[in-house]
Image 1: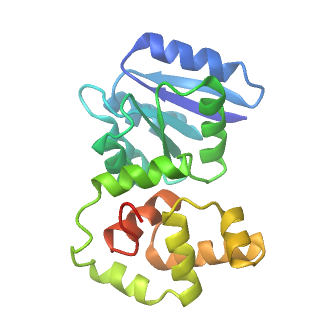
Image 2: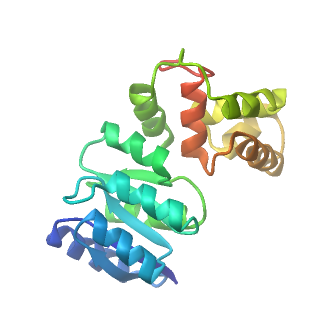
Length: 220
């Protein structure tokens, strides 16, 4: 059973999400928060598997709440939600540790699958939307990399760097495997290794690194 915490300042939105999620045999809503501060408190007390986090809430916004939750509870996955597709807070939430982003008007099926995807440890952001968001909002790629990140990039093998670029272009592991003529398990090993070297926890953060360090640029 995947235990879900809802964080949204609109009660009707939370009610709708609860009805959708509780109707699934493998999902259970264990709590509801009306603002970011309450979300952090409930996450610490309830230890949910996934938090559905609205980014625009009073008292403490969803970005800061995400950062506090992921810092204190790395095992808790956060799926960020926003009314706006191209919202700079989305990238801020990904940097803060969110495991994915979905617009709030997604279909019930997409929302349910998004919860399951982040619970599996994957990123629940449509690849093309992810690259568009990051290409729009990351800082200028000419900004010098931090020393630790530079060392991580320098430590990548040629194939790992190639895989990172393909991830940043929105390719799935299966698509990368096909394009490079290798097995999916080989690609998975490359992904795990480059994540460790860069100090990132998921594909969303890896894409941010690729854009920020100039390996990929918007429009490529």
